Image (cartoon, rainbow, N blue to C red):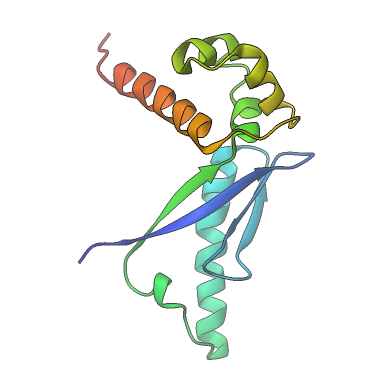
Length: 136
């Protein structure tokens, strides 16, 4: 049996990040880092399901049985979170997107089109795959 994928939407806040699951109303969490969000979301979802069971509420089908959380972050949050690790110049080289345009995305001055989001995602995935091949 394959596990179902639950998409967790992560957004930047004034003090860190917040996250929610669209398919399961009432499951939200916050954290200072993406790692905090991941840990907190697993706990929030588990707690939410336990309360539903205790209250006799119907459990959404998507969380019955095996499921996996997939974390989706918007471009603005990604660029801010990784700014100390990946400069906008480096992301521009990876993606072919102008550094000035990336700066507009990072500051929320404009939203990237779906094609630009794909370029950013593909560039980062390519870098990740290359890094996974390195042995020191």
